Amino acid sequence: MDIREVDVIVIGAGAVGENVADRTVKGGLETIVVEGELVGGECSYWACMPSKALLRSGAAVRAAQNLDGAKQAVTGSVDVEGVLRRRDKMTSNWDDAGQAKWLESADIGLVRGHGRITAPREVTVTSSDGTDIVLRARHAVVLSTGSAAAVPGPLAEVEPWTSREATSASEVPDSLAIVGGGVVGCEMATAYAGFGTEVTLLSRGPLLEQMEPFAGEAVHAALEAMGVTVKLKADVVSARRTDGGVEVELSGGTTVRAEQVLVATGRTPRTEDVGLERVGLEPGTWMKVDDTLQVEGVDWLYAVGDVNHRALLTHQGKYQARAAGDVIAARAHGTEVDTTRFGAHVATADHEIVPQVTFTDPEVASVGLTEKAALAAGLRVKVLDYDLGGVGGAATVSDHYQGQARAIVDADREVLVGATFVGPDVAELLHSATIAVVGEVPINRLWHAVPSYPTISEVWLRWLEVYGRP
Image (tube, rainbow, N blue to C red; front, side, top):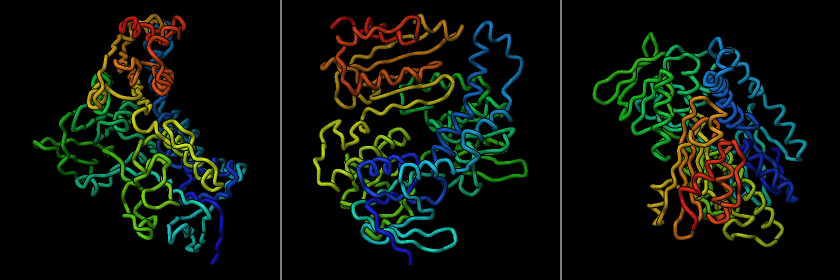
């Protein structure tokens, strides 16, 4: 049996695992990543990149249709075949040769196969031909195996689409029922409605329920304007395959029929078959970690990205990866570890300063606390609301700009603790808000950060005017 010893083993070569490995190698540690699917992982092939490719063309057409001088040039609808070609290009046709080449250029080793922990600091990799390679780590093993779509019992038997099938589909169904009113459900409803698919969106609660209420309300209205049937308080009790597709029965006796059904009701950790039982942990569970991403009770094991359930977003996983890679290297070399808030070796922003963009139409961009979350945290808050259509830059973007922006201010410290933007092109507003929240920039200092005119960023000045001089 082939046995190799290295400094660090990373199980999972998605964007997060790649970043851990990059940091440990730069920290002077020999590192191998183990991957049973494609190097680049979920984000590159089935999530972030292909989903945005599916959404962008429709958004561009609708933006043109809302601008005089451009709308006259739009004589047709989205070309679905063109969108799928672009999506295929974005995913490199599900070929990871380019990403594998990057690993090599970064001096990161790659072992292909399914990795399982078989002893402390030991990972056994089973390749596709059934042969095993044993890897032993001098310092650390990192779990970066991500998450998979959770499929509720009533829908499991009909073999529904998950986000993977929705983003990699080679043909577009005539009708699609989507179960789940979160980010994935709303984004895929937007994309497929743009293709001309008859979409029914089923949600137990309001759309985008974890965000500010006006965000979900705006997306709900926009989806209905695109022809999507949105059903709230929709609880699926059963589903069955028919000759024409799928029938989904809801509580109350309503039946929804569609050619295909997509389940977007949450995620489950990919930890069921990675050998956790060998180190006293429960398979199939989310990993509990401290702020250095070290797994509780196992000082050589780290868990980064979705698998620890702190913030199921690629950019947050990469943020964790940088902290984990650097702290592994520091501990290996016996150098000082900085675990202070916002220190070099911690992922403290995961707790309450998480930025996220939902690429619906309108876009939703948010960071930090909502009003509800801030009040629940015991803060005395001041809420600053402003109609984005009222800023000068909005008229340059669209003839019919509609949007809203909300800032949440900790009134005692007079710093921003949250922000939400809803409207066309608001994604690029988000990082300025993230910097203000992370940096705890005082309101009186923000008066000197003058937004350029005419841009939508003028909302920062309007927020300050609503707040008043401190």
